[in-house]
Image (cartoon, rainbow over all chains, first blue to last red; front, side, top):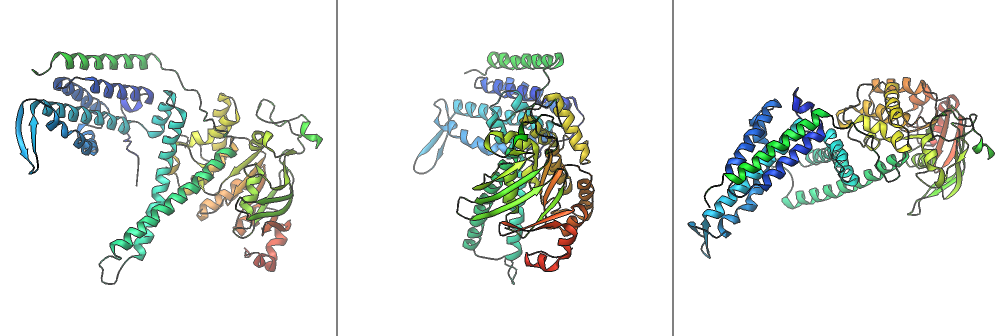
Length: 264
Length: 260
């Protein structure tokens, strides 16, 4: 399994400083979340700007939009809003025991949340598609995200691949021993559940033992509990300019969002 | 030992390096070393070993003989229950651990344990960075260490995208960048294909550091190491020229090994 989402392209977005991209992405998501309910025009403008960025990055909108569907299930959490918000009733759903009434206000609120989060996820997708993971980790570090959190993210990324390999080997070993003569695929559900349970357990123990060896390897090279990092280059004029432009664009979203609202 | 205070280090401009006697830099000496694991298992029962500067010694013995446990004592990861360990004329104890760890480059068997950073550069820079080496010097050292193992140009690669042979070589580079005088390697040829093994042999032969290398690979022993030490049951059971030991079939079989 490959965990990398990075798509190698020769583009200005790929070449840009990871810190810059991270800051702009966070700013973008933050400004989206600050938009008032029903500001669909502003969300649409933000989306168009984002799609333009995917074109500049030579990745293209369809790829980013497709990848963003992973976040769709989380939208379900906002569905109750349609029925709990008071306002113009749009219709009833009879569930036997009780009746749900959908309201217009609730629907607008729901739609706002769905579109905001969907566009936000697309922004994050573009960031991971156009930035190598180590650069992203480095950016977090440079932007003073607490060292322990950065270290956890960095180790997680490094060892997910190793753990996945181990798990794949164990699955293969199980598959090799669970064939049955009539081809029905071996073992009862209970048996298979038991095997998976013990696999998870032994994977945990292996990971735990590995962490001890990794820690010894770190100690062997002078680690004393403090993560140190090399100094990085300062932002230059071009980076500040890009950051300024991004801030102005985000400001435009906000103004649009507050001026053009549907009649409440 | 008075010599710990003698000045004249191999590396004058490096504050992380200690002033050890030139004559002793790179020596290993282990006296009456005992080690009991917290669960009561006695892994080492009085190890005696002396290795001179620049010597290349193979450490062989069956699994569970105590080789890895011994190696973890050489840079103070494990603390002896009894006995002592001296490196480059310095006794291994808590207050000098940083110095000891910059003298001893310990490479673990599984490169996935040794390489824990997102990129090759970060990993090779980890040692010097945490030793307090100056930044401009770190870049220089990383370059030099990667060149020494033939991995120049791989700085920005991620460890899980490298082959096992490449990972093993980068693992070696991660300690070479600390400029150690002693290299302690755990099974460096395990998992390598014949070509990777051949390259490793050339690499080890060309290095001037003192080497203590644990291995099951008898042909590696024959090709690289003039001296062999057999450890079994937590004690040194044989110590002498590799030629003699590798020819002694009875001795090898008795301790769970075979002739090359």
